[in-house]
Length: 363
Image (cartoon, rainbow, N blue to C red; front, side):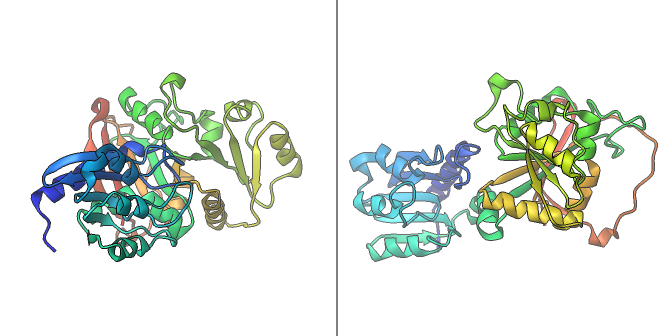
């Protein structure tokens, strides 16, 4: 089917609106909507917060009586079931919308094509697929949670121009610029959980919070330490603040009982796996996070944890900060053949504070 230039412009506006919900709506998807009569936009909206009205309802409310006979542009298939809010399809039909343009289908089992069918049965002309790739990418974390039953995993690291994460003396603060670190704090404030390996927790004693506190975003993510033997010190910043911002320590089957009990008594949630293999243990943890409806997991290192997750195919997105410094020394670790290495589909390259930030998804 042929879409007009205005159709595309209206859908791009809907996608722009949808992005405003990032960090506020999860585990729901980010959705935007625009109502137009001819080439005049008469209403627009986005899903602003979890439990609040959906984008289509907000846009229709903004349009009021002008919506009758118009076109609704929605970045995701309108829902047709009652959840925390009534079905959007009912609101669309009641508003007298004549045509609906949908960017991408909704994989949620209670929708999954039924929303479109419901509208067509109600006499609405429905067209699909406009800017579908963009809409599917925007809702990729939601899709991963619904179909893969685990969070969307974002790997983040900072390194020198020659690929080093730290100096020979173990110094890694601060390779990246203040501007880059500001972007990381903003990202932290929009994900559901942040994970580090025990090596990073011991070396850096991180807090894994978004700072400054007054600039923090909509979320206070769960802080996770992958710590097979429960070695996280009770005097660490993470444990000392566990009663303020939750901390989950993921331990293995051989973790000493006294260490587990001490961490729990200090306010940490201790999650124990029966899996001895680290990759299987991480897969089990991801499934559990999925059951908790956590949508986005940020993994900040260290290199052992990241390497294991890359090898297991558990990384979905990459934020790699490259600082214009050369550390030197050291040799390359053993790695698989080039042909077997994961390939990044680069989506954006920017230059915060003189660094190079490469963002993309794994093919």
